[in-house]
Image 1 (spheres, rainbow, N blue to C red):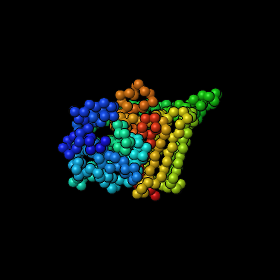
Image 2 (cartoon, helix red, strand yellow):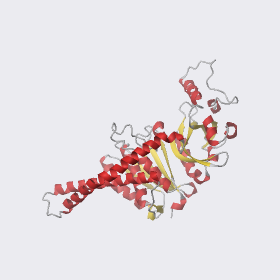
Image 3 (cartoon, rainbow, N blue to C red):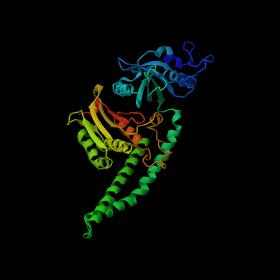
Image 4 (tube, rainbow, N blue to C red):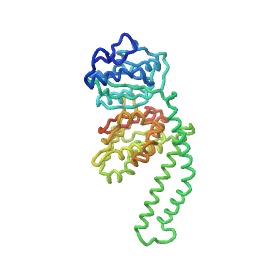
Length: 392
């Protein structure tokens, strides 16, 4: 099946569906359905084919909205490498993620600065997923979504709701929480005299620890609000990356052990490698990735944090698990502000949807990018990509 058959806008292209031919197989039905909606969706879509020997994606077909967004016509772009249209500043790191997804035939979502036909660069979100109806196994659907277009009205409304919620939490929760922390600390330190029972002291420590965790969460939510309103400043310093990640492991080691999950740190960088950035917030990013991985990894599973230097000198920090994974639909909205709002009450492990949004915005504040590769029952891999100038 030729990939150009997907497109029915040009007379130069064949159509999948033919009224004179009865569609009999599920394979033919799937291609016919795709052909019927290919040009009607409001997202830019390209069909790419993986060159097995070179492991590079070649553009086989594009829809009409792709032509409108990028300025390229089908005849101008057919047969060219996808990498030809990625901005040079981030093309090396994007290639690593794209090729990993192609090799494993998993879905990937990443930020993608795209070079338009007139030379302008537009910031897009790219989702690459295997085309399940392709018998050859080499074709993928590549969806490009403009980040600041009118399709984000719903996302902006959800963002405003969250900002109001965060403000209310910050002002109304902190006062009683400070009381909990203060009184539990008095009991822990036995300022008013001995407690008598050691178990009571342990309970006070548990209360104090839970209060600190809650206060930390509230402060992080305030960070998220400031990020979205443009009032956010980084507090940058030089710090050793390995030490920061080790601290995250220590905080979550007991939870991992309790759930029979193995935490692995695979450091491919020098131990003394230093990062220039906001240590506290980058540490929270790693903590959030590990926490999410723990939620969706079953007993006996493992979570691996890998640090390495990618092409072009980029620092790659990946968090990979062998948990339940994410469907293509879940990946497409992974960074949306309204993610999980609909099922927060039905699934207590879901959380309130701040995690990946926070991660992405913190990393972008460091001039980096975040990408995800995942599929159902095959785990998830989140990769943080920091620019070379952040390494010392």
